[in-house]
Image (tube, rainbow, N blue to C red; front, side, top):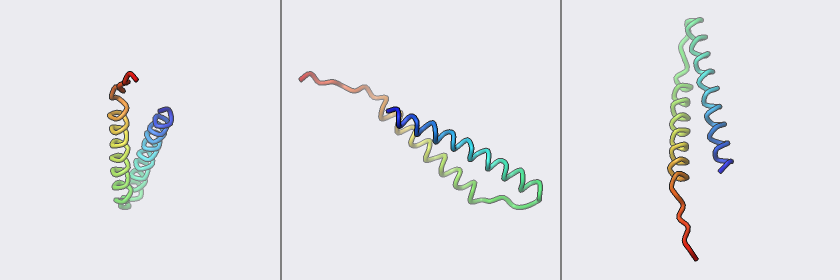
Length: 71
């Protein structure tokens, strides 16, 4: 369980870094009057969706109470 939490938090951290890099790319594109990169935005959206789906899957899977059968 600790490994999964580590992966979720590191994914969240990398998503934050990626969003900051995308913001800086947009600022530079505006400064030099260039067009932005639509592929970066598409990849950011796809990675965000995958991260949210994995986080939801994790919390749904591990939030259920485990029943112990008496044997």
